[in-house]
Length: 151
Image 1: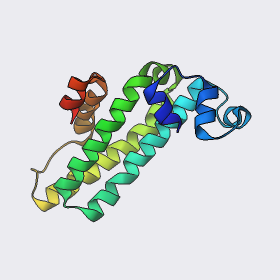
Image 2 (image 1 turned 135 degrees about the horizontal axis):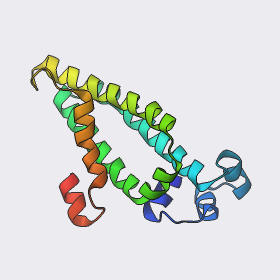
Image 3 (image 1 turned 90 degrees about the vertical axis):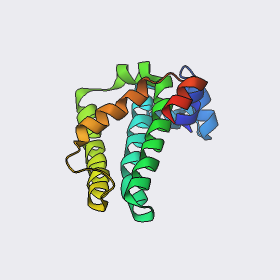
């Protein structure tokens, strides 16, 4: 719920987020004492979901199709992050970046390895390079034109 509210209005009061989530303000503040903590929690949950999606997609689709679907999900997530970018930059630490970056690199590596094994892509792709390239999606404007470009 917090993700949806923050994506629609990055300045939404925590009381609005609590109400939308169907919890009391006290409950929200116990888990997320500051806006920054909430934004970071939303970010970490999103990263965890994207990372967990890689093996699921690979089990259900051909490697190249799985990778395309995974990238589409990442693009959608990036559009959401666009709205909370300033708050996220203020909240995120070097440790947070390290703890979320490595699992993302591993997910990309898994996708690339599967695509290489199936012959869909040439061997030798670097997961960190691909992730850096995909990071451009975060900078795509959250406008209609930007959504078309990122899709």
